[in-house]
Image (cartoon, rainbow, N blue to C red; front, side):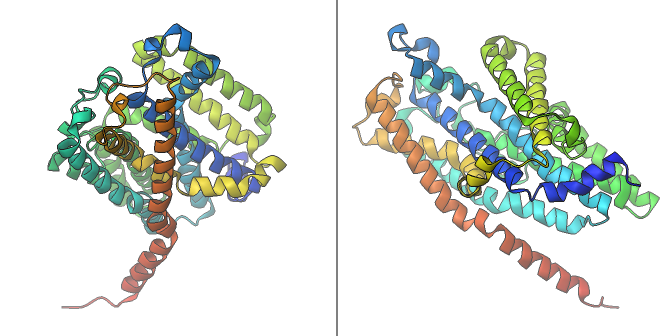
Length: 411
């Protein structure tokens, strides 16, 4: 008789094919990526909320600033989703005896690097051109008042060295080098890379390695990797593991999804209202991130095995928007700065160099135009990258299988 744990893992594959859950996962992916983007775009383009005149703090302005303050929570959602779809699904394959380490490594590397590498190089090129030819706007040296006020990292131009670029290619940004140029969101991608690596090493040490020596070697590599990445990686890994836990918790114990959703919303609102206090104490901020992760994971567990018509009817739209959400995340920061710098260089929009009032129709028009352009470019970029992931995987696996089938040479 199967244990509850084996049952939960055994039903995960079916749950991850459920139209309701698939639609919700796609919704969460594209909405989180979009929230990060529109929040980041607000920073250089508009005044900080404290600078907005009281007469201009309309209900719409207050709601907009409130909602776009959830960008950090959106990143936590990414980590939980990844933990479920990669770690949880991986554990299910291990339990079923179907886990292929080579296939896993190829799947993860192609998923990350196929869009990441061209996005990294493209963003780097935009930063080099922008900091050289469009520097008057002040984005890259942080002389822009909104950037100086809201960005605590060193000037973006200082992150354009070849060493920094190479470190980003090796996925050690945030740990051993800074993210390349203005593309600060890339710190999360290195986290993803090392989550995948740590999972593979942990599974190898626990179950896959055939000999005690191989298991010991995998465990040693695991310890070395975590030791080099440090405590801040372990904190992020815990968020990812919260997503893995979704595969292990019985759905029947989660209760109605409505209660889980209400709890998540309550946590998000409380975190936003207490943001200033949380930011002043790093431990409290991390505790908040874990509350968000656990609340979102609870909702995912509650949705396992459920059917909701409204989610299934929106499945096509959610799938389309999710199909380029990774490209949007990878590109949005350097791309939006480059677009704003080009618009400023025309001489027709001097307000870009100082920041607009959120009720200024010109600022709103620039905001909406930039959103459309970044979305369009990200979608086109995804057609050449994300969309080809499965084809590239099949090609690589075919070539590896051909090489593996060749008889070894004897000398």
